[in-house]
Length: 390
Image 1: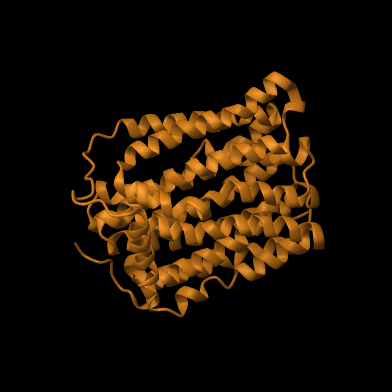
Image 2 (image 1 turned 120 degrees about the vertical axis):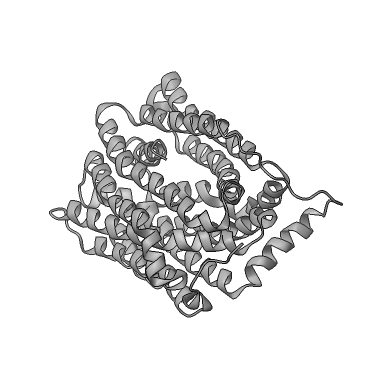
């Protein structure tokens, strides 16, 4: 996760400063990075339930490292002339495909390692690790952009994926496979995953909140770096530092999630987390160059706090609710719904940004995303008190 912060900033920095990309091109970049979840998610879920999830994750890590390496190689071979939007589109698309395999296998793999009663603790530890990486990563990436060119900064992510794969190779706990029997058709397994999510009002509501939030946060996020750098005149080093300091909210959210869930109950924790995570981004619309850094840090802090207070209970609840052998299909269906809105949002943010302007688009998308919590608030989710037992 630490390495992933490097390519996130560096690829957009190449597009904004070297290629001078339009908002629409930045939107397309976000579109190509996330469209695989919409088009491949359900099939990958079936694949994940039929194969060993750890192997899928290792393959995805090696593949993403090799894919990202093509950007610095193009720079070394051809100089700045080798850095084109077509190359960035291709790299983000291939990396996005591999991320589909990793992310679906990742959440399906966790229940194979721990008992249901340990899921909140396990997800808390993982999210704490992620949050700490998001504190140090953006700051380090922004600093690195001031020392070397953006293509070389991407090497940080290459090393991150290689480290991840080596860590996964060290795991030795046997992974249970699906029960033997007559293989079902792919379409049968896809339908089963769809019925799990759409047949349960609670899962349907969680999918609704996350999908709405992702749609507008993707539109918002596609042009945020450009907005901060161009409209609010923040250098990339300062943007990275603001991102890192803002991510301290995620660390606080991860460290307090267990107690937070016990005090409020699972359902109320999910609802409050959605509220806290969805409201702050609109403050960036009112920021000026003079207070941009302080506003960016504050927005990042409360947004990441709310996201962790939302994600840890809802992911743990989903994992505890669904049988282990259906985890891949359930997660794939959820990911297809909630991440399937990301490419649409990214493209929407870019196109609308070129039509009405970057600042107006930031305000509009943040305002629309602020209502995402209504899906869980107006559902049976708010009445859930405890995690399902073994």
